[in-house]
Image (cartoon, rainbow, N blue to C red; front, side, top):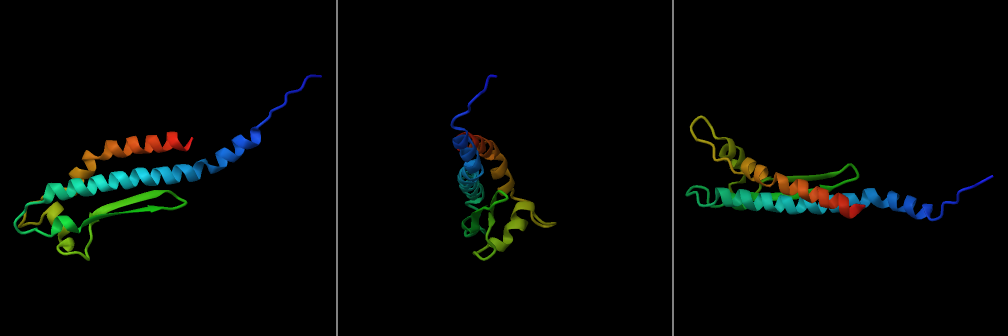
Length: 125
């Protein structure tokens, strides 16, 4: 009768057990970096408007890492000067043309997020 001995399997199992946490941390870093880039891009796209001097500085970001995943939120902070104007500025009104800056900034940085998540996965392995 022949047999097979597998040595070191405990190390592999333990490593797999920590994979999710490593991925969550690394994905959090990727989302943070991209969120900063989107914030900065959006600010640059809207700077220089005569009647919106404070608005670009109302654009902030927040990243939350939970057991369920990672969430990045970028946009105007309604508690900051001119922050409550965000939706009006981005989408316009019947009397004001839209000044898209958040959507285009997000679109311009989408590939960066994908690349960051791919790196996070490789680093977690």
